[in-house]
Image 1 (cartoon, helix red, strand yellow):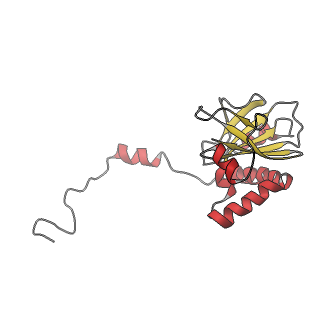
Image 2 (cartoon, one colour):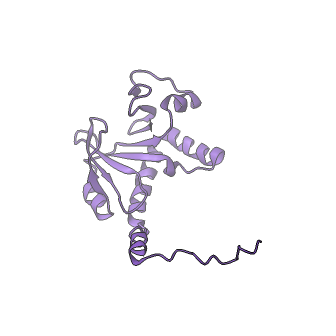
Image 3 (tube, one colour):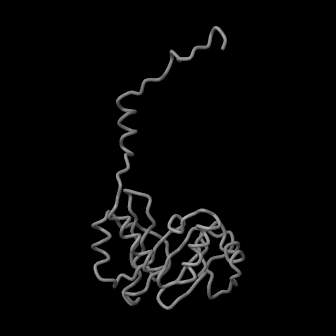
Length: 179
């Protein structure tokens, strides 16, 4: 240490009241009811789509990542009893989006880091639930999981604003990769 250096800087910035107020505005509160809803929806989805369950297990075992953290959007039938009211009760609010044509409304929760929840149009059966996971590249995801890209299971072109692909399909559930 030189003569001009000290262990305690004398010119340390003391935050103003306005700066402290700005910091406190981003105080996150636990949202257990919202997390409970997301967990219930994902448990329902994983029970209906065994291949997605296998992927969730592999993600944890091979990359130490949680399937839930990859979720971009959960797609639920708007005909599911009480879903709209429950979304509002746990802090989800509607927002505009450019999602698929079968989406009636989309919700996000500004009080936490939760996936969006999209309500599918009325004609979709109440048991239907789909999940979209975030990927850097649909093509790479499909290649890594030995899936074929066809016009029937992938939408959007490489380099476009959005691209999506149906990776796994079961009777009442689909897993989508979304870039």
